[in-house]
Length: 443
Image 1 (cartoon, rainbow, N blue to C red):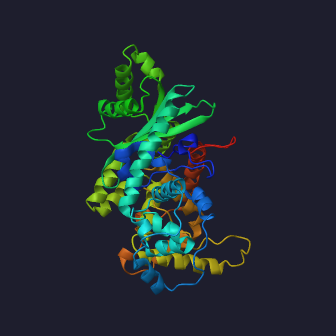
Image 2 (cartoon, rainbow, N blue to C red):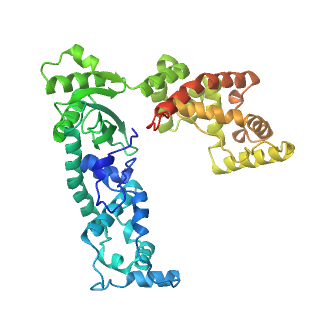
């Protein structure tokens, strides 16, 4: 899930400093920390505040330095003492901004040890360079300190809401096959403003069974001290979430009935749209189609996978054509070259934007919107695709030709255009309802 995290009063700072913004996402590097430290990762400041700080730095040496000079200077030991001691509040602010920059930009803890950054700091302010610890150990320690100080502020805000705290949560598996769960709290604060706070981003240990998910969520809400203030919960339509919420609510409050639990369960609108689109594209066997395609891919049974997709009609045949073009860098470049040549032939179309450099887009079995985007791009490149396939048809080597069974007819292109027309509003609604709206905008 993608949500704006931990804003407002949580990012308190000295009155002389600009407001402390917060993170809008957690990258893979910060996820490793997040599983231990939870929501407080999103409480350090980001680039806007960094800009305000750098404006106050006094200029250092104005002389230009070569790369060799930079490396030589960076390798020198820092001076044992400084002519001017930075105020403690400013030191804390700078260190917090440094952590914020690293986490928000998904950078390693060694980032601030860079030769070029070190020399930049020294040029901007030699006192700053000498007194602020920039190493990975100090940065990790600062992150832990931020956790302690900011988590208390989050708890105070959660305890002073004017509404119940409503939850949203989701689970997914990372590319390295680790299961994660994210849990958000949504409420109206004492200023009567809507707020959303990341409560946990952590490993989901064990199975995805409803009872196990409920155990994780229950520990999180108790840790934040909000187990007596829960309202509704938003999650996808998986049956395991029905079990999860029944277990969660009845464990926290024995007076809650099954009907009460069902009333507090809000189904994710985006997931409903996803089911509608997948049902349209794949019918009732969407899940089995995905699993079969993944199995063929893992076993490298190419011909069987092509036939598997071919059975889906024009959409499946387009999938195979795109896969054929993207199978090697040479073939991808050959298609681009062909597109440029076609554009030169039609150079009389002076008012049209060039599409020669646009690549065809590959869909996958699990994301219906990738299929919509594949079709949309193919419709833009229709004439180029048709002529490229015809050109390849002259090749003597059959492996260099698009299989005859995958060649799209004019009727196939009509079907693809109709599919695109049907999926377009679903795609637009999905895009309009994700993220956060401001000042009456969508989201």
